[in-house]
Length: 630
Image (cartoon, rainbow, N blue to C red; front, side, top):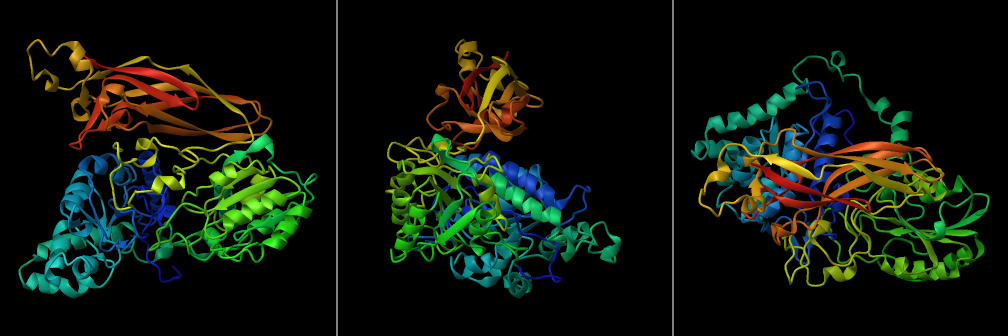
């Protein structure tokens, strides 16, 4: 990470794997559990990094880790040995979606294959995944790279081939262009000599890597004469960039609970605030993993101290919180202050690359610290959670002494300032949860190694799209200090789906009535998809006395007749609307029928179910009837 002056222009980011299991140590790197959110994030992130100068690249981004990679080390199974058994249906409608959008819509310059196997084949040696899907189906313009040492891993750890030369040949023939690590450098020439690989295979890999170097301007002479050649260290910590770090942290905070509108606090009424908890004065914890050197930190304690007088007691030395030795001082602080803010949660010792979590509860004695401090607190108690993955905080949700709960994620260098800005009402929170917060009981008899997304009578299913059981907080949950009202002004009741060609005329006997056709699910490839959208006009009003942002989350539920295997509901559009206090705005939501009102059948084919689709926007529901155009 610390390679100033010696770094290349290829950035192996973003991580867009689906946050399938709440225990995953790298879930913190991802945009969450929803494929549409992850894919939209992927393509936006990539366009931001790569610039918009046609085929020229500012830097080359990379969507990783392809595919079905979401286990690091759980219960004796690690990512270097794990064979993810995945149905084609789950791959097409969940795991691969962000990568497809990254390549097709983001035009990413690189995709990284993962350590794990998928259905018995290492991803970095699978021609169906690399050449077949990324290169031929999605038309990647760029290079495919291995995760670091993953070619060595499938030879040494997975014993996938009997010789190193075969491993090198398999990877390159599968479509791998670049090895992160020494393996191909050491073994490729011998693979050619043994006739396992042709020089043309090697040339093709070189064409894919060198052409990206060319698009980066590496063959164009002095960088100072190029568009981006004058960017340097002076541009990293500039005031606009530091402001952006603060804005990102503010936008990323989710208000989970706010009883009796306890928040925001007031510097006039709350003249002293007890700041307690193992994450109350952390800096490094806030930047999570895969981070460079921050420009400077504002910890939660420092942020709150900008507003009011503070009394600081950690209560536990670190997040492991093994003893109650220092609880007494924390309880005394809460007893004497006008308000109490507890900052608890996780860090890289609990969830990280190579470390998946055992459970979803707060570690060690943190829960006891929260409950005892809340019981003693003279004023309102606010719980701030710092973590990448979800935490089962049912105990706090059910404790009337805890007035408000915030989730800050790992909010970056300005995290403490952003937390304080939300606590004191300078910022009106508008973040939404990108993943389901499950109760600890969800994990009983649920191996992390079971990849299936869909539920069965004996299996709960995964993510809000397929899991129907109890939650602590649902996907998309998030409160505000304002009261927003959504009202649907205009929406179609029926949409005709035009069919292409004669695919639906196979059986010309009587049974093929209009009725049987309308209950069918039509293959997307048999519909005329272009410009086929459901357009909904929504009025969003801010009835509160503060400016704020409302995120419209639009979910669709396919017709009941579609069968057991379709999602319970799925996000089909999302839109953030900023509204001044007392104002309203009309928003047009476009739902692309073929992309988002379709489901993937067991064979991996995308189909549009004919019939009534329920569309939910907040508490408002409408029904749209899809019919084939006969």
